[in-house]
Length: 263
Image (cartoon, rainbow, N blue to C red; front, side):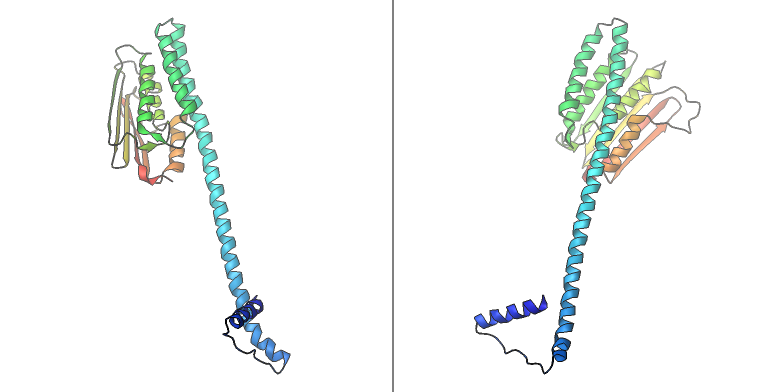
């Protein structure tokens, strides 16, 4: 390549009338001793360029495979979470229908809205936080149909930008956990307190629910919804925190996310 380039460069000079005469060597050994170092240097340079190119291609391929693996794992986690959410909701409706409760038909209507959202709105990576709020309100209304006036539900939110993007169904596992493993298992004064804040690109979600006195407060078990949520957050964000606290008569789950730290 050095030799070809050398002669090509000289021919260019000849065409521009800027050229030099070829060096005449007395012997082949003298010619080789002159061209060999240059050729070796050219080979080294070309080798470095080729290695850098191959390394960049390999790095891009590895990055692509990593992203595809993460997407596959996220889809798998969602496929676990969504049926789990649906299964619990159907159980609630079954309980109403078994007791011939007239609220069963209203429950089915609300469930159809949730299913429509799950089928057509959750196939994207992110949705507006106002959409997540709407589906959360529908789910809370659906859960409240199972209880009498003894259940107290407080839901408040402070949202700076309703168009702020978050992953779909990100917050539902906390709410689902509060009803299924909290209010439904509390005999006296069941309650669920939900607070959502999204300001300065920081999301804070706190769900507190009533709970019976646990025999061992040192061990806090998480259901499949919260466990899957932790893994999804690992794949979606770099800066987040999930914490749970088991009190004497209540259970609190807290989620904090730096929404600008998405992967």
